[in-house]
Image 1 (cartoon, rainbow, N blue to C red):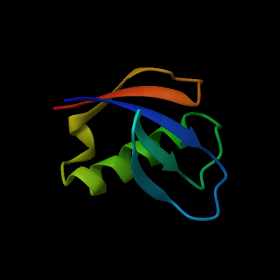
Image 2: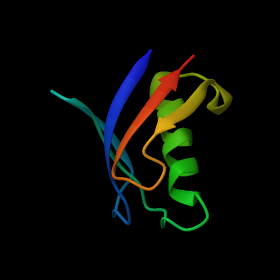
Image 3: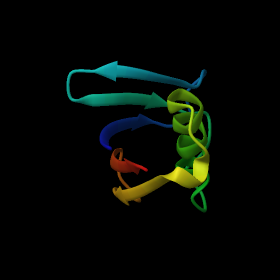
Image 4: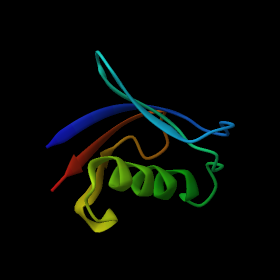
Length: 71
């Protein structure tokens, strides 16, 4: 399954919210050394109840608009 996300970093609370265009994700992590992307993967794995290794970042490494594949 491919999902489209909009990410907010440095948020007060971490959350995953379904919106019309995909998902809105908020994480506390900073965008340093891929820490925010890893936090997003962990948050998505909890939300979809799959292991983090099943979630792959397809595009948007340094963007707030990201595309993930969930295997």
